[in-house]
Image 1 (tube, rainbow, N blue to C red):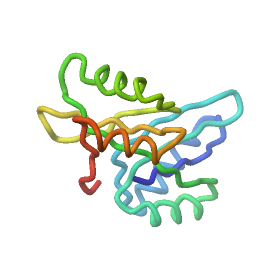
Image 2: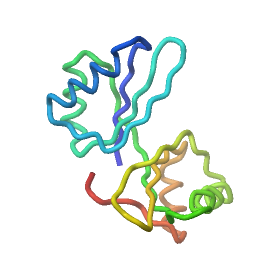
Image 3: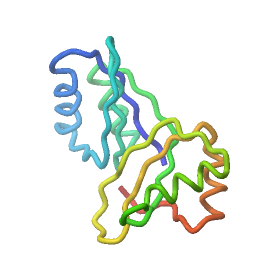
Length: 137
């Protein structure tokens, strides 16, 4: 799955301008996370049509890039996240960051992971009880 990473100046209104441009272009945000430091922020988003979203973001004068991430279904119960993280740790996978994706389900949650080695992560997941989330966004 591809994620769009948008670099924002760390100042009032930057996130507002980004979301305004996306809303005006009818881009529906399926997941969003923001991280920051003193000078800039990084907004990571998942959308249905990443190419369209990237063109909107660039037209609004923001810098962006596309990144591979992995969406994993995990049991929506106590210890569900621990169980998947334990499997990744046992296989020596390095998680660079993660965040959640809202899904309409009573028994599963979906976490988005950025791994140092995406191919290795995909192979590990395919050999466990966990399932890749591959539904359309």
